[in-house]
Length: 189
Image 1 (cartoon, rainbow, N blue to C red):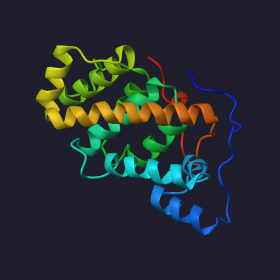
Image 2: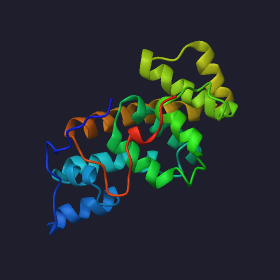
Image 3: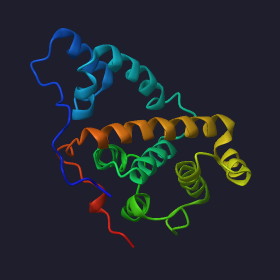
Image 4: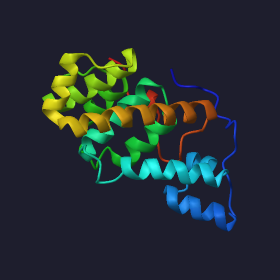
C-alpha cells in the first residue's frame, strides 16, 4: 500500500552544489530526489553508481524490456510509488509497455493475458523471489529457457538491487517526481 505522507525524512541536496556533489550527481544521472539524497555522501554515491551503471547499461544480459519488467514488478511488489513513477515515466514507452501491461505490473498477475511467455516467466520469477526469496526448479528452468543462465543471474541481482532501492525510497518518504504517477494511477482488477 502506498504511503500517504510524503515529507522526506532526509532532504535531498539542493543547488548550488559544491564541486564534489556536482560530480557525483553527474555520475548518478538526472538530479532526481533519490540521487540528490545519495549525493549527500559522495563516497556512498560513487559506490552506488558503480553498481547501477552495469544494471542500467547495455552490458546487462537482459533486454531493456526484461530489465524494466524486473524493476517495475519489484518496486510495485514493494509498494515503492516513487521508484515506480520514475521508471514508468522514463521507460514504459521505450520498452513498449501497454496500459494493460503497466496495470498488470502494478497490481496484476503473470497469468494476465497481456504477457507473452518470456515476459510471463520474468514476472513470475520476480514474484516468486519476492515471496519466497528463492526460485523453484521449474521456475529456474523456465527462466533459463527464456533468458539464459547469465540473464537469470542478472535477474536475481537486479531484483535484489531494486528491493534495496524500493526500501530506501519508501523509508525516505520521497514524494513523486514531477510528471510521474504512483501505483494508485493503475486500476486494480
